[in-house]
Amino acid sequence: MKVRLFEIFTSVEGEGILFGTKTLFVRLAGCPFTCFYCDTLDSLPMDSGNEYSIREACNLIDEKLEDNTYKVNFTGGEPLVQSEGILEMAKHVKSKNIPTYLESSCYDSEKFSKVLPFIDYIKIEFKTPDAKFVDSKHYSKLIGNALECLKASVASKKITYIKIVVSSKTELENFKELLDKIFNKVSKDNLAGFIIQPTYGIAEPSLEKLLKLYDLVFPFYNEVRVVPQLHKFIGAP
Ligand code: SF4
Image (cartoon, rainbow, N blue to C red; front, side, top):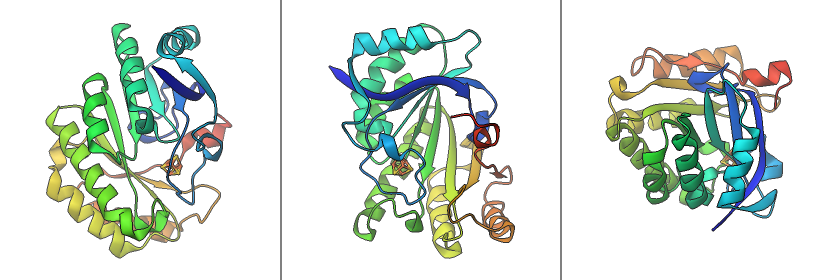
């Protein structure tokens, strides 16, 4: 089996509930989606990066793994595109007693359920329609998959949290609809966090917009946080 990695590097986690932790990022190549705010455009082509055997990829992880690494983050692109590769690499990382972390739009609940046993932290990235993730015809199906993944992750007692990227284009009504679907599926007590992440450098939302979005989440989940991508402020990748 082969896996295509775009890059692998150590940095400071700048997003989500574990921001600030020293992290080995394993960025898998390839993503079929088209979010307008995507900040990893170079990794979207399926033939970006380099191809490795699983053995070679695990050796690369060992080589790059620094002391005091808090977790290994499988990211992309869209990492689930290469779910088999994640599964094998995550098994390897877990055998070294280092926590594994997946950040994904969770577009495919079948692929997700295969990697789930080997992941400790799950960040589910829900997309609003204005993200231009997919066309409107396919949007409901993909959100349906993300909701199934959320349910499965919580049922497996994984540390699960939600992230939604918002911009000046985010419509409050769409955002609220998404919240209704999410909190119909899971209880707030089973979530480890809810992050509203403003876009950076493109269609940035105003403070007023961010507060309105926060106010929509708060009645469902009062530990909601608005957190920008902090790594960008220290020039970290
Ligand atoms: S799903 Fe992620 S990697 Fe793919 S286009 Fe959207 S933001 Fe970029």
